[in-house]
Amino acid sequence: MKKRKFVLLLCLALLPGCGEEILKKPIADIFAEVAESEEPMGGVTPGISFETTAPAPAYIQTEPPSPEPAQDSDDPTSNSTPAPNSTPTPTPSPAQAYIHPPFITADSFDSSGFSNKKLGWYFMKNNEHQPTRGAAEIDISAYDGYYLGDTTEKYIWLTFDLGYENGYTASILDTLKEKNESAAFFCVGAYIRDNPELTQRMAAEGHLVVNHSDKHPSFPDISDQRILDEIYETARRYKELTGLDMPAFFRPPSGEYSERILFIAKEAGYKTIFWSFAYRDWLVDDQPGKDYAINIVLDNLHNGEILLLHAVSSSNAEALPDIIDAVKAQGYEFKSLFDLP
Image 1 (cartoon, one colour):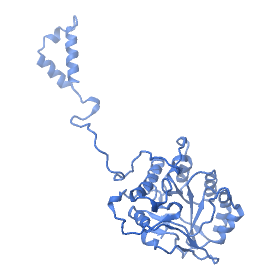
Image 2: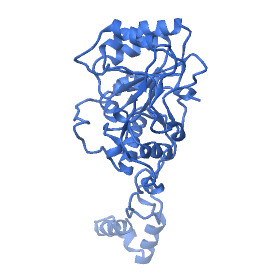
Image 3: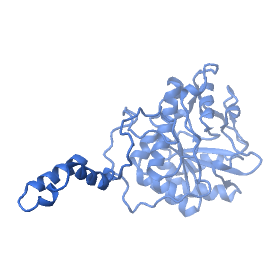
């Protein structure tokens, strides 16, 4: 910049009638005037280096990285557009005014001492409206795992799994709003990406949008770091869309888990949420109908129930108003995952 000003002054000096006063000055004085008038270009403080530095390791910062991951068959390409400005901006409730646990990397723990035998979650029904018995292979409570809440009270936890949109989520949200109840929606990352308006609506209406992984792989089959990446990428998508931290509740894809998975989730600050009742409602081409959905849910009510329903089910969407009314008529109270003991 200094050189350019000096050259400009010299050019002016050579123009007829313009340079007499300039040429009377010594060269040293011209340089001095240029130096005294110089300001940092673009407001940049002198001395700041513009050399690039290597990025910090993934997830060391308080926010995970933003590049989109490679897509696979569980994460199809989408032409969806961002939600319009008319979409309600989520206003955090006390439960949503929540700070995500610090992000960690796989080199911060050692999972080698934990079994990676793949297990599938199950429960044993009964006909007495008593709490069901969950899978017995591992004491999941030792790893902040839950399949029941407080069984001393008539509490029920309503949860939905969302891997893709099948046209019924808006109806489910309408029902919950009409009945003044909330639920937890375990979403995969691709759902959040492809359905921004519905995701924002869940958050704006006080529901919990929580973690079901990014691409829905079988977690016992993938590395420790890939497990963290799957969880953190989903949390990143949600934070980027809503501005809210995703609460640290996690449901393993397809209910497939191992002791190693439970350990890693706990190390990451997550509670792993299974269920004490569910039924075959995810087969979209083999739906049992509204009455069946109502009856099977009511026949299996129990204290502390964590109820899993799939939002892709037309039967569930049609039955939900009657299910909520009947559950409340029997004295049950719907609770938030934040209320787990």
